[in-house]
Image (tube, rainbow, N blue to C red; front, side, top):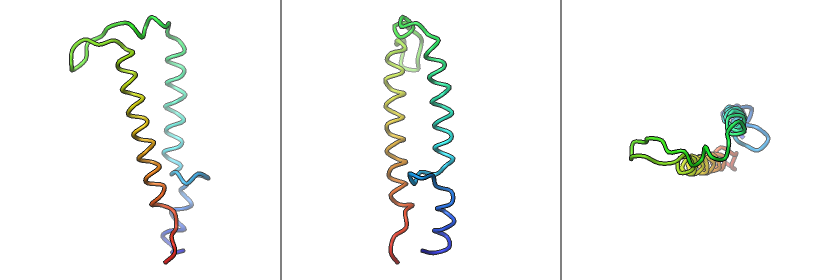
Length: 87
């Protein structure tokens, strides 16, 4: 393992994901759960304006979850490139 590799490993969590990302995801997840926990189910059906017109909150959250899944894939891809490989 090269010195640069060992420095990178210090920044990684036990799963190989950079700690800053894991920490930030945990913060955002906690805030999201708190916000959603304070809302009634009817809120999902409330219609609001969007750049594409008027949509309900359920539609918006469907897309938020899709973005999170994409970012998880990006993190997984990055993790496979950050692990040490034989020289």
